[in-house]
Image 1 (cartoon, one colour):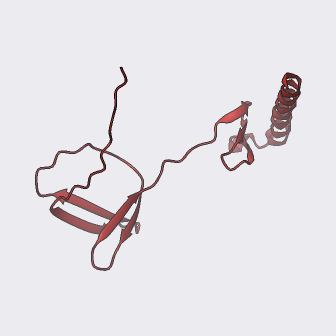
Image 2 (image 1 turned 60 degrees about the horizontal axis):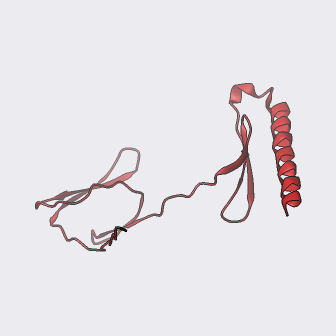
Length: 127
């Protein structure tokens, strides 16, 4: 038997106090303290916050970032295909290994390129 789950969108109004502050580094903070008993699920998220001149505060949760999954990987490199239809090649190496950088970059990029060629050949044979 399938379990049916309905998610209700509901708005909750809570009385409380809000404190605005600016830290020494220039970043702003806003703290809200409820003055009534409220039971709700705890959460953590990234929000777009808009503070108005009259003290109103509007917050909208930002969607979670969808990361590209690597199709091919090597020691310090990866190739992925983005949701935007573009191909991405990323390479990273510690700064103290700068002497190895050109050789490793060429070796790993060539290795991933060979994997792509093999995949294309296998795909053509399958079709």
